[in-house]
Length: 128
Image (cartoon, rainbow, N blue to C red; front, top):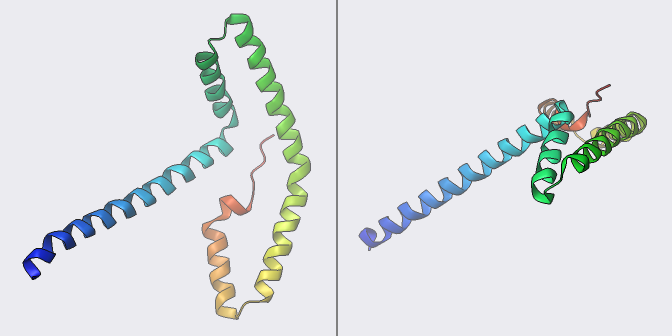
């Protein structure tokens, strides 16, 4: 009976190991992409512009117009982020304070550690 079970057990372990590795690598890749997009929004804009050009087969005039539209939109989004960010941070800080009030001291320490490890998601970065 054990001899018949071993190949299935090995197969199951390989499957679980592969699945776990896939999840970890995907999470790291997504985190990296998000950090790059936040750190360098013009690179994302360029990527969008290139994909639109290829997918829509834009001519030179259309490319120029799309470029101007994307640049203007990026400026508008930056301004909106500047207006939005202070209120967003205020809401996050209020939520964190309320959460901390419900925790025991050792849980508060873990919350602080969690916050430090995930700072890039809790504190949006504003670029001028």
